[in-house]
Image (cartoon, rainbow, N blue to C red; front, top):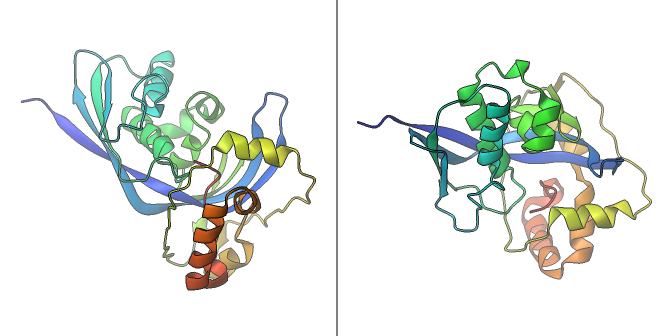
Length: 242
């Protein structure tokens, strides 16, 4: 019998997200407070004669652009993976949505083959696998900076419940960053603490991309305004693009 296992890959939300500027290498420095949420992809892993990636969503690439492929390449490069497996990604996290599904897929695979994640080079992972991957290796809640490689786990003292709306509107992350690069704006910062209460989080909810989305896309504006009418001022944009 072929042994098979299944990994859970949670989604995430950005409760706070500021773009601090573009770097010389073209990447952007950010400051974010991220939390994992109970919405999951799964990745099924089986021994195979070669590395094979498949997905139930035809919109997800299954070649070298796939983050699981990049994760395996990272592990091979560092001598942490020498076998061959098939990886079947069951998408339940909408793609694309900015909820981090692809990065979570990669992080779950890295953690499975290398459980001692603190010894890994988060800078290399952020550059070569995905900027959100270090967070998924360190959550469930964290202040994240740099391009995503600097992760400081934090405690959220109250249970959090979210209503997540994913409108059928696709706004490429790269386009949003390019537009924001041309803006002149005062940077929002957050008080870095070891733990946050619900009251703390409610006061700091912010997303730099929200202004861009509302200006750029009338369909998004319509969805967001109706959403905020239902949930009040706590309604916000929880991602950086799609």
